[in-house]
Length: 543
Image 1 (spheres, rainbow, N blue to C red):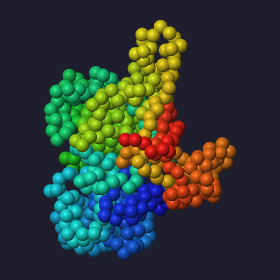
Image 2: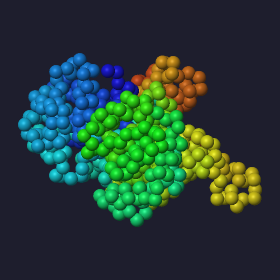
Image 3: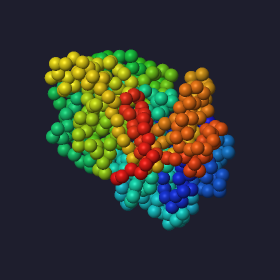
Image 4: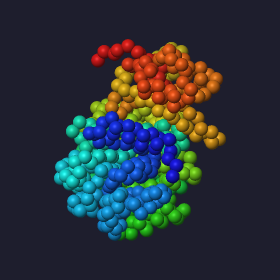
């Protein structure tokens, strides 16, 4: 199995973190669809080569089977990987690598012997509760081997019901590697997204709905979602907007809401099926959705948020409001996988989730797991022409990842009262947002990108972190020619009087050796698809 460049980076950075912090436990953050399973399999493979023993834990039998199947791609792992899961009716205990369902292994953790590494997939599901299955499993495994390392993998480093999973006093100490959705979309590894809000009359109103465990109570929310012809109105809008979409995944509030959605779709001549956790025929229903071209809609009630990997999904409908940033991301993430049959994935939001949480690559999370901004409702706005959800500060209809959609120009408050045409035009086209950030740390790595013609473009990637996880990156074209090479040489000369590097590996090695003068602050311009670094401050920054 050939790993992608960022999967290799995730492994290398994690090994570096463990060497530098031998007493700490990190988490790897890879977006949905980026391929976590090959990463955890490769790490497990390395571990047993070094004479270590590994347990990989997850909560869904589909994930366990997927992890086992991936191990079959490595000849040197055959016969060395076992599964312990009552759901899969397998109970292996003696292999160097055990893939276990947490529900099955936590009660019998003391019967497996000693492990050197515990890898937890979908690590955001670990409750902040000492009595949980995960916590009980970890406690027993630490009793057997106090030196055991714990590694998490997740698409979202925050729980669906509250707070980050890393940091002081939490299960994981820090993020050892992270890559964002826009970078992977740009590289062709994830699918581009469109996002639109439903018509106002079709959107589920949450005012007055009580909350439980940090989210709205589903029984009250279900009543709100089905009252006054809400489903009929929403389905009419959805059918119109999904013309040309082949596979549509719908998230409902509860079982009754999902069944009404299915009935209304079928009443209008659209073939749809619905599933829930209680449906004993759910595997057959999901198989029909995947294999029958006539079955375009699959409606589910909080079932297919994790472990449902069907790349052909080209539309996700959020007919379920949620306070949980994690649940919001997991629902949208079902459409991120690439497939030759689709150009993009349409996200239709009838629950106000995009406005509530913001773009999926910039979700704000508070300690309670709820959106961390008081002004979150003004974080985005809706285009009156095409209903695209766009960042609140934009002056033209651009999508959440920066691509122009319909080109509608938003009239600003200043323009509305202005009688000076030129001044109004200047305001609409006004200067891009500029921010100065104090740099906390800098990471250097060789970056390889495969072009459409198969040629590999190599650069030195430089990541400037201005918080624990927030960063901005630039790519220094050490091995290029022309203008890109001239720009790279100026960048290098600003930081050292030493000789120009022979290649990207040489540049990274010398940067890591401390040869380069490093900026204490950077100036970032937000004007295009990605933020651009337009200035460097090499002096100490106050505060």
